[in-house]
Image (cartoon, rainbow, N blue to C red):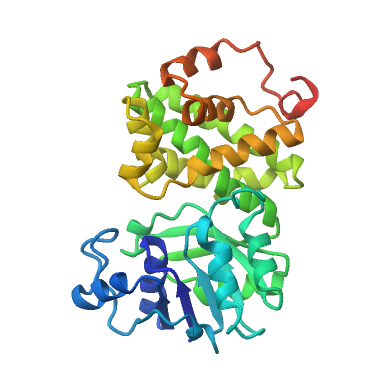
Length: 337
């Protein structure tokens, strides 16, 4: 049994807590929001995000971040926007022996740093891992069989996380490619948002298949330019996460994209759906691609829709009528742009 605290009581953080508690671990959930904790204590569930899923009574709930003391695992289940602030706050109390596991999928606005980089800067005395892959909170909390990946610069940390969190319904693979796993998990949000736009426009399966296939190529191109391994993008944190996020109505990115395709403004779509990591990640990916000189046509078109007012209907013609290409890896990755 491990002593685990999850920072963040949203859907994913709470789903991890439920899974860990059901596996017999000593689990605490921290939230910055007292009303959220009160609601869970009063009803036994997080009705807004995980309706009908009961939180085991043995899960401890707190708003005191000093509870990170004496924990084997500190799991970050918070949006990327709040990651640095929460990490810096927790760093005052966390012990050096604790392993920090970040589950956020995105890049920091402004710095364009990955979440592992942000975590290491904020908690320099701790060893850090990331946990990523196709894992909707709504299914994870209900014990639906789920397979994801853990990545760390320290393989001993990865194996500890794998051995501690794996159970009959939750299988974890180890991957040493931290940057690849993080970029796959982050940038798939961009493609999922675009996939939703296609759905909102009333396009078909052919279009979505093309978008997903070329989308993973874009992600791979940028990732490899940043030092990632190409094989990673064919795995759980790449194509695996892309499939589930583009195809499921659990996906907030897809739902927001559907609204945009139906004519709702991007700002209103985000407001209706809630946290949409793909919105800010599109801007981040756009900036990175220009900084590194990587061609990302889907990202370019989505950026124009989100931030320049382009009519989503115009993006299809722009993509379909681009100069003809070869599909080979060499040509795609920059030698034949």
